[in-house]
Length: 450
Ligand code: PLP
Image (cartoon, rainbow, N blue to C red; front, side):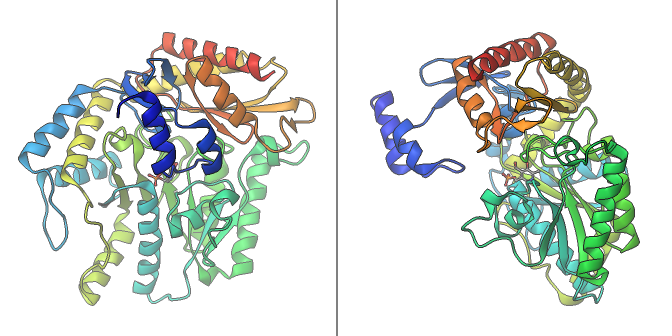
């Protein structure tokens, strides 16, 4: 490409971008990111940004980690590709499956690999159906997700997602998928309702939905321990305990989508550990390889695994799998990445730097635009409002986050705008000084928004 301008106009002509207003893109063109180092990325004009979102909630060990480059290179030389169909295996996939199972300390028995979180959640839907067919319960097929959940964009995973933009004009959701309320106390609690009472009300609402659908038709409940892409929504502390009690009563599987929360994001290895979730199925991606390679994993509890295994014994081949399921380079990178997370104490760093991030953001609470600061560990959401007392949204169209996102670039910061919320989810390697610098750049952005 002969010049920056050429590459920009070629992008506009020939690249259809995900999650982008296509017509607007023709006017603005791309922002081309050229390289990264640590928590920073640099665009093609050399401007530096703090990557306050770790890419897409995912680059745990930061950019430019040579150990991951070397792990990929070694594996590329030894065995660049092999599949895992029809009993084939290779050492990195075997070791990674064992490592993931070990991390769960007996709660999970096996790992099934896919390339993305969306494919992993599609796999979950199919496994839940397969499981209930195996148990002779052909009617027990509905899956309950939450409004504002994000579980991906393939046909089944987009149906689980509870965001209108992922359904509109795509003829979704599938009829087997139902949605219940989002556990956002600040926005959805009744006046004067405590977090505890709010959680009880949502559990009662789930019970009512199950009764309305018929308990014999409801197979599973899926949730992110803490919602990410829906706006960084941390549920009340007792929410999951109450939801699980309802699920157990009706023999409904509990699925923890840990695509964002897995491997330390919330200051413990899993989000399930933070919220006391005892899942039957867990889903991981993103931080599993720090997104240096595409990879996701579905982990099955001994109970679910055994039913699926026995059914396959009866009906034959488990008719599911991807060409790149358990790809050798991706699994080798995951192993090295998880080793780095452990060796460098990045989970503890997420707890410590996360506490500092929340302290620094809460110190801005007097700002007239800030309605709520929420999250835990190294993930935070700042909701902008027009009126703190009435919580009137900052923008009737929910565009404040998008505006802040654009402005932040001017101040060398990449954040994410979700309706009127600004999200932070920096690499787990961030230092206290870098947390302060990130918040300083955010303050300058806020001044522009005002
Ligand atoms: N589940 C959760 C919780 C996510 O946050 C995401 C992506 O952001 C997905 C699933 C989908 O993952 P992918 O984009 O890799 O398909």
